[in-house]
Amino acid sequence: MNEDAPLLRRYAAENSEAAFAEVVRRHVDLVYSAALRQLHGDTHRAEDLTQQVFSEMARQARPLSRHPALAGWLYTTTRQMAWRALRSEQRRAAREHEAHAMNELLRPAAEPDWDHLRPALDGAMHELNNADRLALLLRYFKNKSLREVGLELGLTENAARMRVERALDKLRLALARHGVTSTAAAAALAMSAHAVNAAPAGFAAALAQASLAGAASKTGTALGLLKFMASTKLKFGLSALVIAGAAVVLVLEHQARLKAQDENDILRLQLAQMKTDNEALSNRLDRAARERAARLAASASNAGASAGTPPGVFSTNSFRQRLMDNPIKVTAGQLESYLKRRHRDAGSLLASFRVTHDPALLAEAMQKYPSDPHVDFEALFQSNAPPEEQRRWLTAFEQSAPNNALANYLSAGAYFKAGDPAQALQEMLAASDKPGFQDYSIERVMDDREAYIESGCTDAEAEISSCTQLMLPQLLQIRNLGLDLVDLSKSYQQAGDSDSAQSALQMAAALGQRYATQAPAEAEISQLVGLFVERRAFAAMDPSLPCGDNGQTVQDQLNQVAQERADLNSLDQQAQPFIDSMSDQDYLTYKSRWMAFGEKAALQWVIGKYGQQP
Image (cartoon, rainbow, N blue to C red; front, side, top):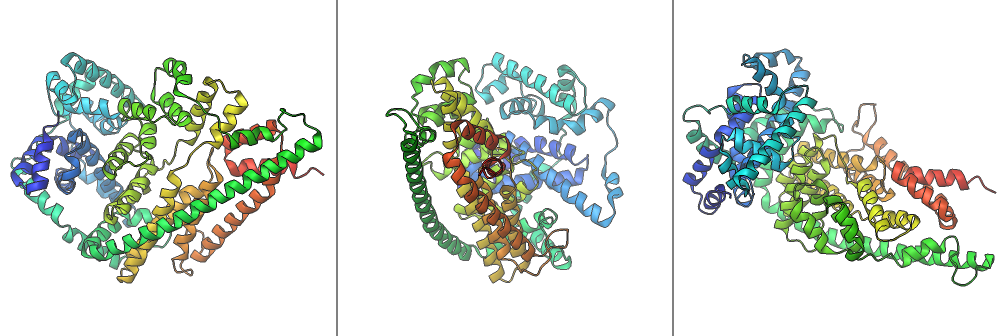
């Protein structure tokens, strides 16, 4: 039951301030309290942050009217905004050598137990899954009865009690990881007594008006940041992305509204060009695959003829050729016992979907496990999914994988495609603050291998099929996102805003570096995509500008990217003849090394072993 949805729809459709004010009244204590905790008890900054959160809610009222739990969105958004505000403040303090001033903003200590719990509470809450976190929010932060919690979550009162108890136990373990030892009952008592602070009298009414005004225009903030950027000479380099990120997003957002029509025209041209480029790329890949298959077939035929291979017996590389020409077909029925033994968990359903291509298995995973990041990632690439469905799964992926920058990158790409560059840049900023970056390739290959074996395949068949059938649909979106950023920088450069243009290029370069750096189970094509994005970003910069902390210039970075690409091409050319003719056992070893160390390392192993032979 979502009582906020009609109010948000009414506000979005009719601009009803009364409806918006009612939503604010319902949730202001939750948002204000979370802001107050995370901003170390600073009431003024908590009020400002609360206003920012509700301004964002006003801006996104229409899509949020379809959100299953507004309280969860508000709580997560408050944490994200507070974290960014604190990070920005800490950087400024470090640059100005005034870190000691932060101590003056701290509120006097409350009760000792709560003072011990408060700094760790929000971090521990965000380690829970969405369902558990929402249960605790409703019970202890919104002070709802178990019956009301059950109504909100679609559960009976008894089931709601069990959900809350399990969530409390998980919270206790999460708090322990943060160094806070507590029983579940003590944590519940502390949250009930202290987690929600009443907002100042009259704050909700004033906040509704201020938030609506803030959603309509951020001109004052943007102008202040423009002055900051104009008066500050930022050091050019990829590290500047983090320092200038918040300013860049608001500046670009303000300017995007002023030049919306021009940018939309530019983006439409980009999309048309990307469609042409993608079709050409697809044709080249198809042609290369056909040529490779023909070469392997010829090699297998020659090897079989020279060795006198009897009819019906596969030669060394015809085994692999057979799997590439005729991929193993697995039906859902062959995997029923496997799914039953795994209790149809998310991993088994997704693996079964990938090896059978049965959409019903993916649909079951999406219905049962909507908060699992692996499910959300797979759901993003459903064929023919409408934009609103894709946006729903992008939001779910960001929430289920809060530390995975890939979720924000994919979301940014979708916003560019929808013609909303300002929102795309906000996602890029969020990605820059996240150290994690993964596309779950290792887990996908391992689960697929298990599914193939359960269907009756041999170990060798399962090993080869799970690797060769691994799909990487996110690479095209990452490539397009890099091109979007480069093109956006050109539009700002043409408008005379060189600072924003430069920052957009820095974002593109940082995106490319994420993929250009080798990781376990990473295919060579992933690195090539990363190098492609880096090259396009650096090529659009002034080659003489300094870049990085070691005295390099942009031209040096371009040269380095070109060398890395040449090295990869050379490595592939040297290793490919050996791969085509190596034994099945060595081919399996090659694939195993690929999964453990990445394709580049596996290619180096091939050359090291076979390149020295006479």
